[in-house]
Length: 358
Image (cartoon, rainbow, N blue to C red; front, side, top):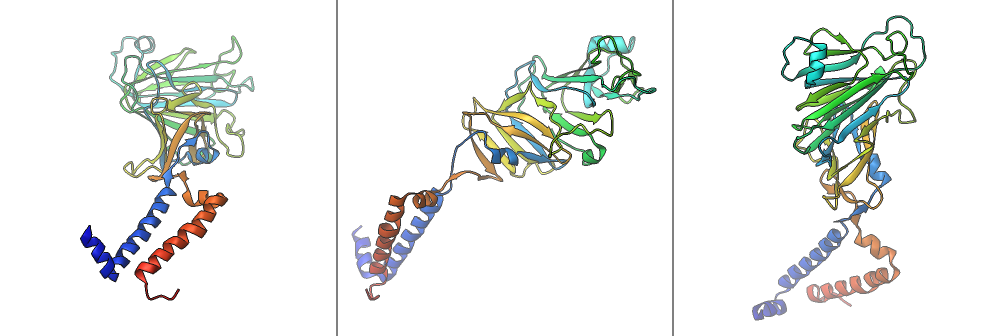
């Protein structure tokens, strides 16, 4: 310590190095104090606007979604002019359905299965549409879902007037129940209402015309691809300025998850363009109002009283800004501009530039 004091008194270069270090540390401290990640109270409109996954490029990733065994992962209840089709790459029919539709055939290993709309024979006798209901649940006795991914793969959704969402729960098995019903009791004929003619295709085989009964399918792993089309091509199924389709729900209206991310589909190692993380991981954040557009999919983030931290490409989106706080406070602004800065400059000039005139 004595040597440093002596060096301070005798060496102008040492004093200048110390002074430069003090100024640099002060500047760095101000910068760091102005970029402290800040907890935000949800919901935030600006954050919702950023929760957009571009078609064929990005995916919505829900980390550790809170979905118990048998609970809904995704649901859809169709209405007039809406026709729903579903494809699964790795699926198996319920045993009872297997025996009913393919009597005498051996049960097959998981394979490609689709539930789609067949052609309408003749002119429909009504302007309404058969309504399809889809419920996708976490299978009983299955492991929790670690990551749930939602994305769109068809870039021509807008031109083709349909909307799409692909659901991928990784290695957690999912149970799918889908049925199509007439909105008019006692009326169910492929010639009476559009969208009534449903066909089941298993492993690329001959399509099987389905009677009006629930279809139960187990998806051990892999993606589920859902398409939603207008039964009348002249009337689009999307609404509003954003031309979004909002009839598909996460869970039974919403889901909670530890975090939401918007990630690249092809470059999964890249930092997410949006990363919203619950302050309390056990409580999570609520995700709701899934919107499907021709070029994007998005969700609303959070409910009142929920708190989170938000990042974009690894950098905090919301920070404490010390400079802004000082400028907004007259007393602090006066102390900083009239007292602290002049005192620091006087000290630097005295010790580093002793020959400067006063």
